[in-house]
Amino acid sequence: MSNMNDARRESISSLFEVVATLERKWANEWNSQNSLGFSKTHILILDLLNNEGPKRPSAIAEKLQVTTGGVTVLTSKLIKTGLVKKTQNETDRRASQLEITDTGKELLSKAHRHVNEIIEKMFGMLSEEEIHTLSKIFSKCLFGS
Image 1 (cartoon, one colour):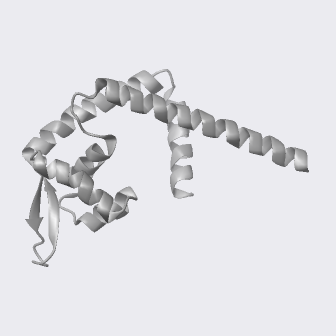
Image 2 (cartoon, rainbow, N blue to C red):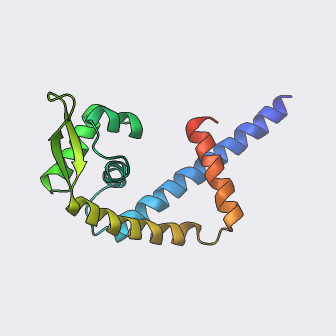
């Protein structure tokens, strides 16, 4: 019985190495091509605001699983560079929310092209079925179902 557990532990350990290496490769690809000057998380925030409309910082934090303080740090750069603007919440005047600007939308479409190039480079050799399976597996790891 313990042999089975050892084998499973070894498999998980080697999976961890593969995933960590994949993440480094992704980061290197991102950084080597990244003339945009923004991190992947900056782009995720722009994407979220673009797809779902204005959001409060706490909602962004929850969605991206980072702290509200982390969101403040990330979004201050986006605000300073004019990609995101602070607006008042329609229903609750005391609450501010963040909204993507037209400049933000332009940068986002550049970023999407960049991401597509990286994905093609890193996963282009996979079949549709393999991509679908991998996506299902990653979602299961992230969300537990």
